[in-house]
Length: 398
Image 1: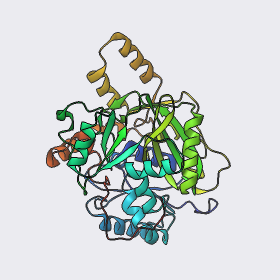
Image 2: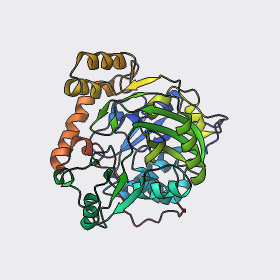
Image 3: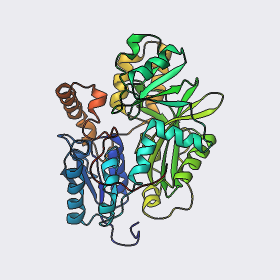
Image 4: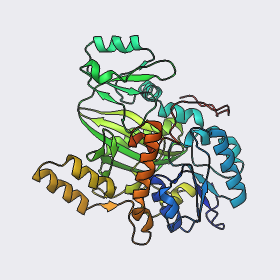
């Protein structure tokens, strides 16, 4: 890691499109570091932010992974970058090229094979279970006959793609053929089936280096876009989740950002893992020393105060129009909004908030061009679904 006492070198954030990228840009700039953004696509939430010193347009990590990582190498060499901070799923091609990138500067991520294992809903569950960590029974589906066998067994299950995000295609407790008409597993697009666990969802977000937790936030899921993407977050005290996460990260020696989704009923079960930034970063953003925890050593784990709230204001406005239908629900919604920080708006950095409409227009363009939903359009250029580049990743047992 860089010497914290040396001249502050630029930090390269490898995606400028999402709220977590903007949060990290502001965190880094507030700590006195020049911020560089490497973004693919026509629009970037961070492009108008005063926290960003330079904004680079790079090839798509999903569609041109080799060109993407070569572009990063050029930026690192040209700007004298001191740290590469991957945010979303562009972390996978970065991890595949980690050996080359790390000769130029530190990269805050684990090796490719570990990241892949954690992102795979089947491999993650298999690994966790093998080490005594509680997860639902999880099986792999790679054919339609395998799916038929599950459906005819009359089990209480959840179906989801092996590699996916936001629960956009998840089917919970399927009871009709219509509900699973889009589920067509094959060896190149595998699905998983998990036993359904009744309870409520708990999410966590952590920063770690070599298996040591540097910062951690836990929060409940209430306000969402679709089935899974949270748009409001309230920090909760959850020692059991912290213990589960700490054990997993210690076992794997993980370095980077990671989120876990849990279901809490009679017992706490981890249902999936996201080895990247998640919305929990918004609950940690104002913790003193958060960036220093990555760049240098930090004696203790940073945890936000219980009850701390944040929200995505524009999406909450859409939520109230679409889903709030009673005076009680409206009152509860208003209590949440009035007590929450909007993660996009900042008095000292207002343009990202004012330009959000341009982002929605760009998402609509991508959705129309590629016949995907707006949620899927948000990650279309950088999501990672198990595809491999010809670069060799480091090997780790997971």
